Amino acid sequence: MKKIGLLFFLALFACGGLFAQQITRFGVVDTARVYAAYFRNSAPVRNYESKKADFQNEINKRTDEIQKLQQQKVDYQNSGNESAAMRIEAEITKKTDYLTQYTSAKNIELESLKNSLQNSDAFYKKLYSTLERVAEHEGFSLILSLQQANAVLWYSSSVDVTDKVISELGL
Image 1 (cartoon, rainbow, N blue to C red):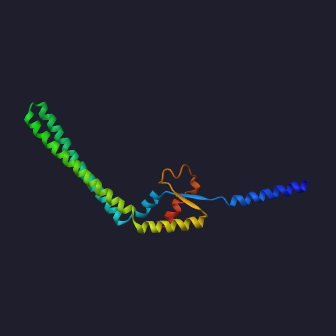
Image 2: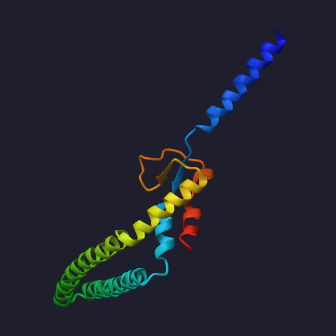
Image 3: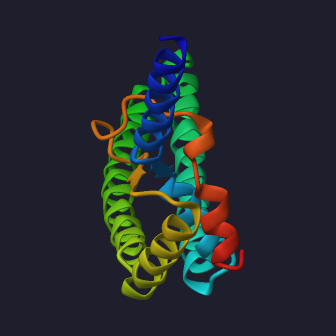
């Protein structure tokens, strides 16, 4: 009877091992990190970053001008020179309106550049073929993107293949 019990236990243990091998393995990849690593040194990204810095410098310069004018207005008001204060107020309004329009236009331009970078067909073709190669080599059945908030509720760092994808991309 003990032999039958032992055989049953061994058979159950062996079946458990078979079922364990059939568990689907999932992987997650931080596509934002892969994207940043891939495009870090590319000319289009450098162009985007340069334009972004130029636009921010111009915004800072114009903001400083407006702040100086506001201080002048306060100084004129404190000294009782209301006509000069009103003239400065008109100039502040004009410069503020220009800054608002400039900022809006440049944000649209930057967003357009960013979207064209993110929608690079060459990048995505290479990414998907690399993901496929990494997934097959590592035995993953599914790779999830961390950027889709509702798709991943929890994950173990042991299934994150981001560094392997970056490595396979040669970065």
